[in-house]
Amino acid sequence: MTVRLRVRPLLLVLPLILTGCSSMSHMSWPSVSWSSMNPLNWFGSSVTVSDKGVGGITASTPLTEDAIKDALDGDYTLRSGMSMSDGKMLSFFQAMDGKDVKMSISGEPKGNVQRVDVVDPKVESEWGVKIGTPFSSLYSKAFDVCVKGEGDDAQNVECKAPQSAHVTYVFSGIWHGPESLMPSDDALKDWKVSKIIWRANPVQASAAQ
Image (cartoon, rainbow, N blue to C red):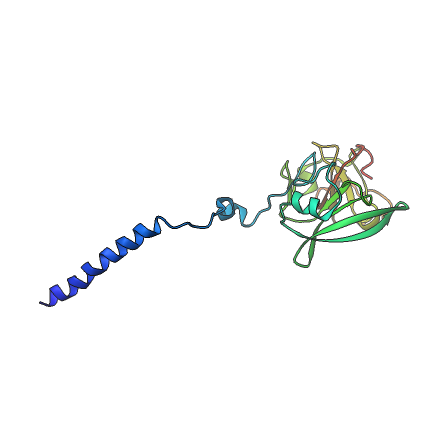
């Protein structure tokens, strides 16, 4: 008697479960982005620096909020501003992750993007270079490839990417010599990439600026 009482409720529940499964198979479920569920995409970025640009940003991208947001796949929030460079007025957008600036996109007002400065550690160049990459893994000497930085990068060194005339790497590190001189190759070998810059116009090998 006891066994039958325990089994009978179970037998009554099973048809309900099976009926529920059958009806659920006909339900319309929200679409799922499988790429967003890929663990490899949780911690990385879909934006890459290449010879053509940064993410979807290229030399033909208008310097507008909508165009830049679309080109960066909406990965960042944007804030705009104006600045002066060599006596010229520039318009720029800063790509933000929370309160942190991850890149700056600039150019002439109402024109196209001319330059993108990347400081986001998640963004790499298509050749595998990212923030923190050591100088010694890319170059053996600075001659004819690197120049002293200017402006905010005056204490740094900017070097042309071996694979691209549009991409340069800004290296930061310790140098005990005169500020006006290029650090020695021996000192530079321990310096690391602190910024990746893409420019719409090609960069001369001996003059990153």
